[in-house]
Length: 324
Image (cartoon, rainbow, N blue to C red):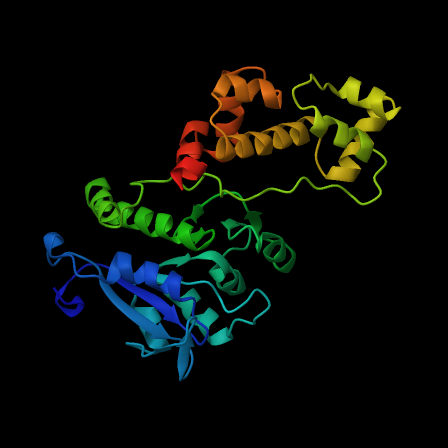
């Protein structure tokens, strides 16, 4: 059934020169396709150019939009694909239109670096937002009034939604569909796309987390020793003794060097080691737990799920070499 013959919520996706093709495709796939099994009460879909043409997307595609920027203010949901760049200015006219749409009840959603557009509107001031982990620090520095969450797949703050890297946009779009039409229809669309039916927004982005260390830190030798023998029992007292410091001095120097307390750092290092073993090997959870120092499979599962929002067995199923 063509979009103009449907009567569901109107979804508008923004177009601009340099558009992220994949992220536009996500929105069009979820909201723009005909789904005859759902009848007339399904989404209407338009694309809105925010600037004059000619417009080209990544990959060399030329873009012919349905509407100009006026379509933004008609929409029930406005989706912003990844923006041109974290340092690229956001036109004030676009900010004004998005604020006006929000004031009249529209939901606003961003994918990846599209969060910079929402940030420029001022609507995220004092709120939590996420974006791709590569852009998180830039967003935090550019908009210190926003609480940036670089871990979650997506976040909701009232009628404003932000999501992480490109594929997390699929999770957010399915969540919006779920809120509008319920689990059955959202799961049906997910099956059509051969996707997991539901990944919650607080599930972690599967980034490779570096373990930060200030250059020249005097505790570096003991940290290297810990990382080389994770199976050992490492208390703050033992690490302090190895560094020749009192426990109090060691903790202070540790936070100065790494930005986090020793216990948090050690758990993070063990999680990273666990991820590597899950991806590259076939050891059972008890064996992995002993190798990385968690002591038991129960403790491993607890910390892994707390940090990443997913069970280690599910992580292995998705990312292990046998799954490739």
